[in-house]
Length: 77
Image 1 (cartoon, rainbow, N blue to C red):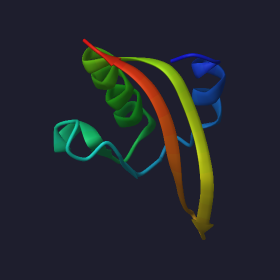
Image 2 (image 1 turned 180 degrees about the horizontal axis):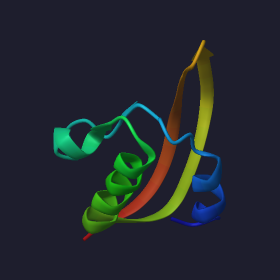
Image 3 (image 1 turned 45 degrees about the vertical axis):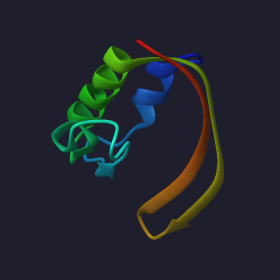
Image 4 (image 1 turned 180 degrees about the vertical axis):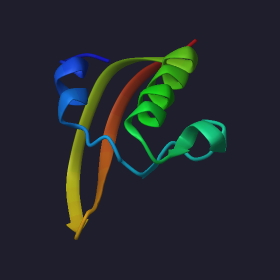
């Protein structure tokens, strides 16, 4: 991923709960409840495609829940 993924991962909570990339990743990889699961999800993504642009926008949140839309530019492998 372009940018600073190591810096980003330093601020990700160890107990992150996520559900992303439904229909693209296997459900076991697209859902998780830890930073290690989240890192694994990113590794699975990198096996499928290369990211050239990752531009999040339209943020929303409620309590501890956050959602956003991402404009991606990728190349499938």
